[in-house]
Length: 528
Image (cartoon, rainbow, N blue to C red; front, side):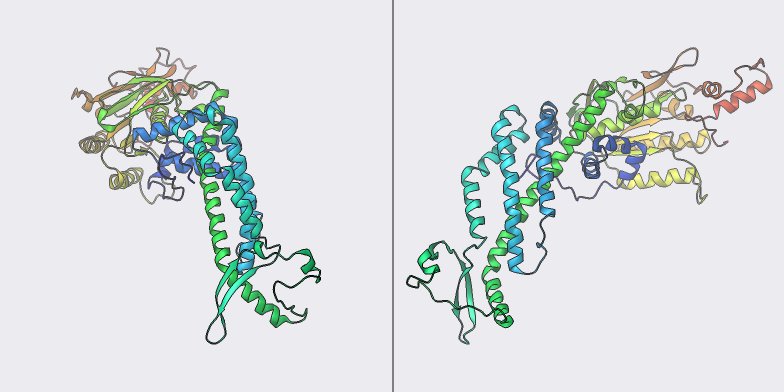
């Protein structure tokens, strides 16, 4: 049997290597927050969630297949959690049975029989759920699962299993047949059913005629006992191997069922967390890469929403047909948050999940790559620009056509002229390779250079700022400005709020220069 809850015609590969850039994705998109919310402290669910989220699907139909299964899970969460608990319990039953690692055929057979008896109980529980509740589900994945359980685990199957397991207990002893070789050694050992040669009560009491001849090994005859044990092992070896393989097959089913259901249980955990925080969710509409679709309303950074005490602001963007989106505007205006929300939504869409938005439509991509600003190298083995270029070189080796590239304040470690030129050349190369680029920047030279080209495939967004300097954390379609309003952040940090000095004075100009060197987190940038 197969679960087929994550793929329509194959098992999910939980031991496959993660994407080479998975560490950057986890760090830059703050994926740990998302995975922890999905796992709720369960290490297994954390690992399952990480592997499914990072293993993006490239086929819109495959994404929709998972979405429909997840929609069923959200509609009937108690049943899904009950099935997951059965799979977990089955694997715990297996761990509680000892002797399976022995080399003795007798011990192998004994352990396999006990494992199969425990598995039958769990299989009956799954069959009961399929019989009682299958009509509540409508997705292809879950309806196929329940039909398989009802077809493969019918009453005849359980009767046959019960009969064979009872036989393998050998309550009447093992009945073997063998042949003699030319040197009178035993060959051709075969285990026989003992049901047809069961002795009647008169024979067992020594009162009736004998149907067979036997002898008894004396209690202290160790050599005879060992010889008999060897004969028995040779006779039941094939049966022991067959029983062990049958048990392994059933446990592999429970292992896969636990993993695939575990992902949906993790999604249910996340759904509950978001409901408490009143974060809207929706199933995105995926399309093929050739359609160049990207539009959403109310898109939020789901990781920020999970951490924040207050409700997080969403953004509405229409970027259909755009391959380059440049985001500029006020410091601390929500640009980096918006960039993360795009990357997280793309990953969640391509693993079949819902997204933190009121509506979301996008084309699938071949992979998500990030290049975010990092802290200065504390070991001083290289400068920040060297580190940025090194990471970009690594990305260039991995990225391919039809991928999504997210830049956050990249190439800002040098002066604006040089940083802008580096950024332009990198972005142009990516666009020529048919890669969609999002670029958050404070470099007016870089942004204005693309704006002056008036390319229809480029969209310019700007973080809004109210006249008093407050941030709305909303992005709007607008041309880039030559200022990032760093002075606002300086005021928020204490600045010269109570000062009567003229901002046009030399000292005031110096303070303006100092304010413009503050980055989005309020830290002072390295002087150019």
